[in-house]
Length: 532
Ligand code: PEP
Ligand code: MG
Image 1: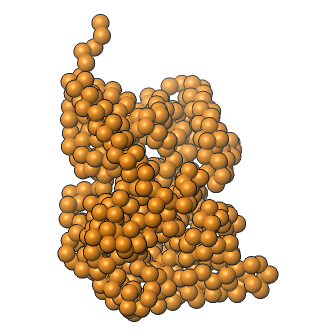
Image 2 (image 1 turned 180 degrees about the vertical axis):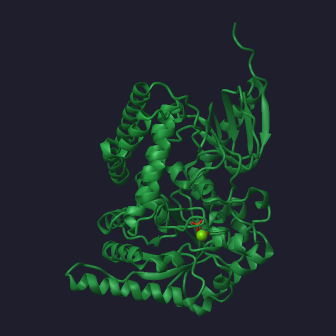
């Protein structure tokens, strides 16, 4: 007998990335539960070997799909997992009667802890690889390999890190998060990639539900959507496609207001691979490249040659248009294993952005050298995140000049790019004239969270973190006025730039340059045309 279909269940959270997705429901758990009963040692050892073999097969598939830097990291993990030394302590514990999953989890955690304690940052970063491998093998041991995401799934999770998002193929799928917030970085990525997302659902009892639908525009999750819901969603999908086609018509035209004011429209880049699908002629350049997202969270930091290759490729894509590359903004909700500080009580007020880069000059120097070398190949602008006091910008300039001097001394071509700053800390927004920046770009995501004291990753205060707050708009207006007075560009590259409902308010505040996720361009250009 067929089980009775589950009744439809509707839940409301916060709209985080628009769009509709319908598919099978996958509950993503972060913590692997230890559930196995210990069998005979020989059986436990065989189970562990089989799980390792399955994990190696996963890595081979992932590596083939990832390409480039991603493949290098996965190949490194493969080599680690193939090494007998990694599994020997677990096999020894199994020999004394311990269950395979417990033996594996405990021995790998002990090895990860040894890496954690290493002096050298490179070895510390390997702890994340060990934990990644521990979790991958444990899933196979516990028969949880089905948590690999099938294409087009609706993923229900407590929260997601940006790196986990970037690792996943979301084609046709959607995301429903119990925690999280529309202002978080992972939500920003979901909007940029067009993956429908709802956050802040708090508690969801998904037991027994196999299918789900997400409407990221209204913030709704349906478990076991019925025919009536599906028909309504199909009608709304068709309407959205119609609007998108109409907006796309204006994509190649410049953005000009009704009174003839030309507004510069730039794109934000999270992943250089996405540029292959974008015609540079649709924009005036790149207003923000979030370099912390170019590098996988568990793979350590790429060396100078790799960074240089990525930056150069972006400049070549732009064909002479300005390209703004932001120096590493790790920290906050963008952790990088082995680099950011774990366990800060409030990571958004901690060692993130330029604070972290200046605290780790050996890491910063690698990026600055790669940027100075890339500057030879186009119109590069280097932007410093989270600047709070002028000394941080000046220290960056000093390190950049030193990097260029070293490169020239070694006979390597390098050039000084324009050095500008993000205006996202209230102290900088209140006194922009104190900073000798070649250009300013307002980070409205952080500026809003700091001015309204409403963390961007806490859904319960998402309503307060509103860029239309008069205090935030006043600061934006004052920074824009300062730029006009001194003849230096002021742009805005936070998510507000990509929201057509906010375009009029931002232009009224005096902005003439915006930078946004590529898929927001058409709608914002159309919105500019409707502004006075
Ligand atoms: C911002 O804060 O608005 C910004 C663009 O930077 P990020 O979102 O990466 O912190
Ligand atoms: Mg920011």
